[in-house]
Image (cartoon, rainbow, N blue to C red; front, side):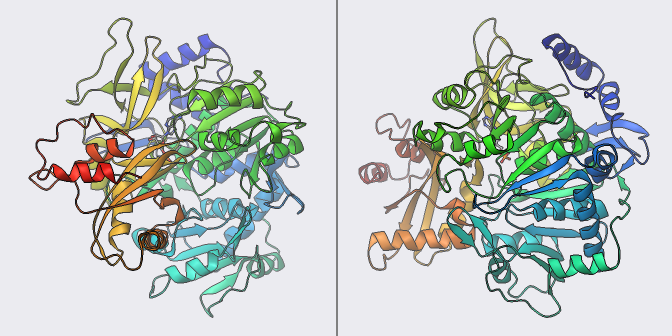
Length: 640
Ligand code: WTA
């Protein structure tokens, strides 16, 4: 059966868009009618962006897992919900049908209950990409606990900060994770994060690598033992907890321009409707197709387009444990051929990195099952777009360039595969329900001026169903970060161009947030970590263009006393950043300097540092306001 809310022609898109703007309530209630609700809504939408306070489907009750599991288990229980491809291709893969996944989710839901987890409790999940990660995440949703998944690349210190911020009392982790040639000791990182912690009541540990780990009596329990216990109790099903549409579903931490990551909170009802709607429309998903999103569930892309969107739509979703280059750079193509993948959704960084291996790894790989390709997370350069189109899609597959954010919950700007036109490196048109606009520095709307492409800061008028509701524990932070820069608008933090067709092209962040390999990292966060190193007096971090990662991290560091030599000191600094944030935030370049360009009021002129890092030496703009213009020449001479 097709999806009644699937847009199947360009005209239907224009019509849907028009209706969604003229009457959002009618538009979204029509879409929402296709979902399973325990109780229907009293009102579709109440909102203001001043507090902000956004409520979709007020009065309604639901449980997202009934939409993702029960309704499909009933109608097509033997259809695969998850296909899991292990890191090592010689290990046996696993497949969970909708019936099986529902049963496992119920059983683990019971495990959570047996361990004292209640509705509204925060459960932190720190796991590798194994089927149990899906089971655990969905089981939290089943019983109404709020999950907060932390990507496996974050350090003990980052986890400790997040546990504290979320006031989490429960953790689910693995002994370790396999990622390419590496074993990541997840449980041992968790143990480090819990030194001195008195609030965590239980740590549930899934066996994966079976590396020796410490298991603390009274706190740590094995997943397998707990599941067996539930099985012995004869429990195969538990009722889904009724959730108010506005109850929080999860927290996901993301970096902003200040030093501390924010816990973005998404609500059950709107998130469910929008992730499913956007999945079905952007990728033009057809029943029984195989969808492979290569992201990690530790990021929003994994939440929305490995788990919730595809499962709600009854799709078969592939979970891949490893990395694109292991055991060789043909791994993605092997997976596509093995499972006859129809939709491949990945990051420009992965494409650029695979391009570097030439066409060899693609030879003799059967990619004929592919119908739609997608990219996410960062701007895609035209060269990578064409390579993807020619060598992966064989010019037969539309490419969707999907723009969105952790805070938006789902894709907001993208072409709809094969339905609306694509344009290399342009995300193109907003989805129905999404009113994008550009504003200038003063907050004035930038209007089209006839035929030229215009540029500005990307903002959104009015709410879409999966807009973030708050930042956990600090609503004011949500307001100042997103809703206060321009009155009555949501500000994305991105800059963009708009051409005369109304297509958007994202040019990148306009705030102090970097996008490294599609991962968001705040420069202030990296500076804080560097400054923690004994001997560092001050530092400034900026981004610079990087061929594969999109952006690289360039750190200028004032060091009091170099202990040993510079190379070793650089390594010490990398260790410090790895300890404080995680290896994903390690600077690519560290330049030691004796001073930083500052204004007389003491503000670092990042613009100058950015230009130098980009390789610009002449046009540094006005440096006359600098306290000590001489420092700029020194920095230029020492550029790495
Ligand atoms: C960037 C990832 C250009 C953008 C889903 C945004 C993109 C940030 C695109 C959000 C795209 C995401 N083209 N830039 N198609 N998609 N971005 O929260 O700067 O990890 O603000 O969400 O990634 O990153 P986040």
